[in-house]
Image (cartoon, rainbow, N blue to C red):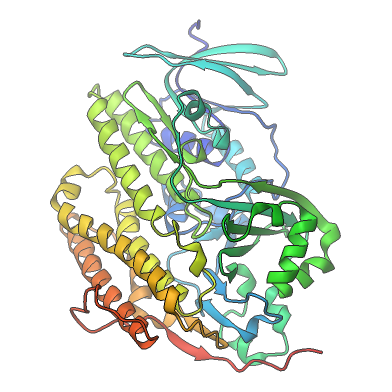
Length: 538
């Protein structure tokens, strides 16, 4: 169905974040590769484009900066993030009257707030600058999968009419449309049932100004710019995000456990405003002042899902939301794009070296699914405790330690496909995965008997030196011995952190008898810096 002009090394279905990043990574690793990207939407996209996934964490930020070489754009055109920040502000009129969790200074390893319209426009332009055939306004009409070495076929249409392509690799980055996933019936229920609604306002919401009369509260952060954080306003069964965009817009989202806060209670702008007035009055007042600047509104039922297969020896693969999705909390979407794209590039490398693909496809998929399941444990069944000011800060400390201490190390040190390393450390990594599952269950039991005290003050993660050091060390360059030493040290630290959390829970009145005791000095989880709340404004 194709001639020399329509036969390509790879066709990528979807030119959003996942697809364009994959194209750039393939081009960087294989400069002679003939790549076509088919994107349904016309470029340029509007700024503050109607997409979820505007906050990055360390893996995605490193991927964009260092792997794809986009450091200059991120520094010049996007916002440096002031970490994740949580306010246990259910029903609170003022944010300085509740417990706050976050950092007082920007951590050493950067992350960013991403204006997706601005970023994807840049990615499209950069793809073309690097010689990638990026075709926007191209709607995929169908495809045929080749088997046993046969080429794949793709049909698409644009303003010029109908077209047909053939390719060696068919790579699905079509987002939630999930073209291959739906064709092959690969979608799986992962047991995590949450819904989301989000909207953008063409207005910067500077939450620092909401408590401008409380100088002590402002002085706890340097610089005093909490608005640059991915701010989370939390209550039982839900959290609300506030993400600033470099275009000047602000993204607001509600994510909630279906069993506690049904989607019907916030699935349009009017209902979302009423819902926020009940649960987060401080944010509600800010939105009402600029409600006429609404740019868009969208909701999703069943955000989270799994996938039965993402990599095939028949030279097809899924990346991003075309394959699977976890949860917006902790912003893992960009991370799993980075990981999936890296495994796809590794499979292409094996193919170009004429090595059999089946064993590598099985290995990389097993590892990818292992990372997915380990991360899913952070969310599944955990939403009821999101509004607990006693338990949730300990959970965040644990989750950070697990993420920075294990998964980030493997990505930053380019060890995602190091079969020898995984085999050698298999007992320790399995024990850490089991401990993570044990800890997530422990947090639920603690929540059931928690004091849930909510004193005003900042739980400053910068005053946990061990946590800052894990973050700082992410960019260290480690040799074979160094990565083994680092992982073993971090796995030992996880056991100490678990013991410190057990001691915290015991002080909160929980009977603790099923977690490991600290094997060394218990690390301090936080330094609590109380801030006297200013008198409410009448």
